[in-house]
Image (cartoon, rainbow, N blue to C red; front, side, top):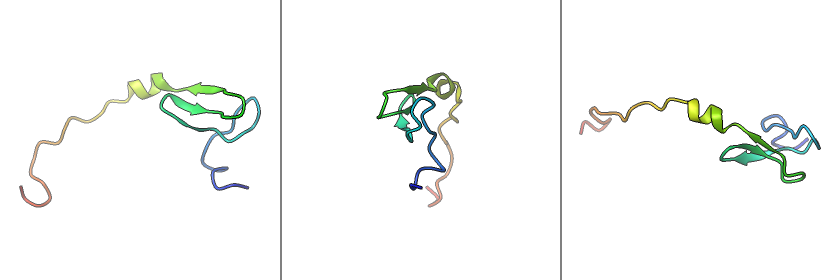
Length: 57
């Protein structure tokens, strides 16, 4: 078993461990893309922190 077997998803078509892609996960073997861009777009990023720094500045 490889290092990524328990972490990365496996391709539903060929079973190869998929790699990260900016849109989701991609299979290098059969070129299948699991597109999660809609979920990524739905994530609300917190506003920029506007307060004192750890160093007091």
